[in-house]
Each structure stands twice: as C-alpha cells, then as structure tokens.
Amino acid sequence: MNSIVILTGAGISAESGVPTFRASDGLWCGHRVEDVATPEGFEANPALVQDFYNERRRQLREVAPNAAHRALARLGVEWPGDVLVVTQNVDDLHDRAHAEVPETEGFGLIHMHGELLKARCTETGQVCDWRDDIRPDTVSPFSDDATLRPHIVWFGEMPLAMHVIERALAKCSLFVSIGTSGNVYPAAGFVSAARRAGAHTVELNLEPSLGQSLFEERHYGPATEIVPAFVERLLSR
Ligand code: NAD
View 1 (cartoon, rainbow, N blue to C red):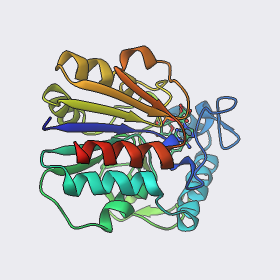
View 2: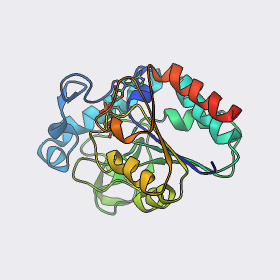
View 3: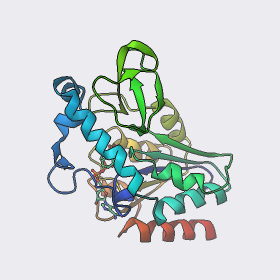
C-alpha cells in the first residue's frame, strides 16, 4: 500500500472546539449557509459576511490541533509512500500539527475550500496571508482600487487544486475519509473516484455518513480516539 489520500472535514476539528457545520440544523454558527457562504450572500451584505469570517479567524487563536491532527502529521512523517491530506476545513489545525514534525518528502496538504488565514483581492484574484479582520473597505495590497474577500470557496464556486486531487485519487491505494458528513460535493464523490482506482476505502467518523455504504472499512467514534488508533494500526502493519 503505497499512496494514501485522506479527506478530512469539520469533524476532525470538532474536539479542538471548532463548531461543525450541519451537525444540528443546517446553520453554520447560527447563520444560514446562503447568507455567509455564497457569492450572492457576500454581494448582498459584505459587512455581515466579513464579520462572520473575522469571528472564525479570531477563534483560531483560541484553539489548537488535537490528537487526530497530530496522528495524521505522524503518518505523513512515518509512512514510506506518499500521503496527501485534502481538507475541507478552513481552519489551520492541520498546518499547525504538521509544523510540529519534520518536513517530509511525499507529504502534501491541500485546503480545497480555502483558508481563513488568507485573503483574496476582489479585482485580481491574488491571494496573501492575512491574520487580521477584513472590513468591507479594507484596501487590497494588490490594487488600490480593490478590496479583499476571505479566501474561502463558497457554494457555487470551484474548489481549489482539483486537478492535483484527481491525479492523487486516480493512483491511491488507500482512501480515508475522516469527520465529514458526505453532504458537500465534489468532496463527497472522492470515495467513488478512489474505488475506481482500486483503492481500499475507510470511513472514520462519529456516526455513519451519507455515503457509508461506499466504504469497505468503517470505524465510528470521536476523531481523537479513532484516528490515532487507525494510524497506529496502519504503521505497525
Ligand atoms: P459537516 O459539519 O457537514 O459534518 C461534520 C461531520 O463530522 C459529521 O458527519 C459528524 O458526524 C462528524 N463529527 C462531528 N464530531 C466529530 C468528532 N468528534 N469526531 C469525528 N467525527 C465527528 O462537515 P463537512 O463535511 O466538513 O462539511 C462542512 C463544510 O463547511 C466544509 O466544506 C467546510 O469548508 C466548512 N466548515 C469548516 C470548518 C472548519 O474549518 N473546521 C468548520 C465548519 C464548517
């Protein structure tokens, strides 16, 4: 088993204190998805949308990677083949867990839905690191005539680095889906692509996801318990 692709979702960060998305009633931290996670919502009320992501960005200062993020960082170091972590999460908890271990060739991390700690120019599309609040009138560092938007892929927009992800899925021998409800496409379709490539497919989640039947192996429980245990088993094989 050489090449591993791991898809993570909001569930892996839940025990760090980052709220998940659809867990209760389709609201993301009290807001309708249409209002805060679509281009139309941003156009209708940029101040509300900026405040929503400002709040999420500030919250990152109060949370830390948990045992599940750290287990995947360990896998990236110790696994003899390629490991690609594709996260739907916009938090930086995978990044911080990986920063704690030595850099390894063959390890990759893709934020397919963008990152809270980056901002994008509304005019040129250029992206830069950004740790502060963004106001509707914050001037873009790339153009005096433009403002900034969060570097977040909203519903209706194309996820990032899809060609890299598709290439990795087409040649992976193990696909693991962690803490994702299977509601959001195209991520929810990755398991089928991995199956077409002949990969072994594993779901690790608190409860069975919508696509549970597509996974050959399934383990349910809190990510901080089942992810380190899975990584331990994988590395000791
Ligand atoms: P989701 O909220 O739709 O689903 C979360 C899944 O995690 C559920 O299946 C739930 O059973 C599971 N879960 C909850 N607690 C868990 C735990 N302790 N251990 C293991 N699993 C647990 O999340 P999604 O599928 O990632 O889709 C949400 C979208 O919203 C993503 O596209 C993402 O961009 C965005 N989002 C990101 C964050 C973040 O960056 N942390 C948080 C909320 C939403």
